[in-house]
Length: 227
Figure (cartoon, rainbow, N blue to C red):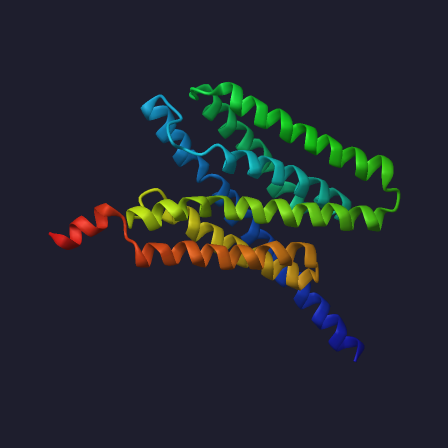
């Protein structure tokens, strides 16, 4: 019986190592999709209609998850979100540099920083119990992750009006679905509901976005089919 338990533990450790590497590579790949937006911004020398909110919510979300990783002493969560924090900061600098409404973006950044400082003060100064602190921070992580995942859905209204998915990125939606599925599995093996909860919603939201590409192909695809 003890031997079987030991084997199960070893199997879980091997599975966690595999999932850890998969989550790290897939998530950093997902964060690197922001380079596509930055390239487009630099090419046209303007932020144009590219939304700023996804960059900001990603930055805020990664900051919270980084703190959660430190509380849980999870190196995978810490490394991935440290990378995401740095990349999203670069994307925001790129966006603001070519924005015609810099004051609005600076205001959003300042407000977000104020919220982050408020959360940090509450968790470190008011909440003394480490377990309660982890639960509250986990709840904040779940909420912000769901907001980050749902932010591309704002373009769904445009898709429904134009009957075209040109305003959506297929690769982004695909990566979000894959990454969320990997992290859900990682959280399931760890039995960490904080990791599982936002990622099951990420899978569902990603599938909704991918379904849009089946129902409403881009105009370029539609034109090729017509030819």
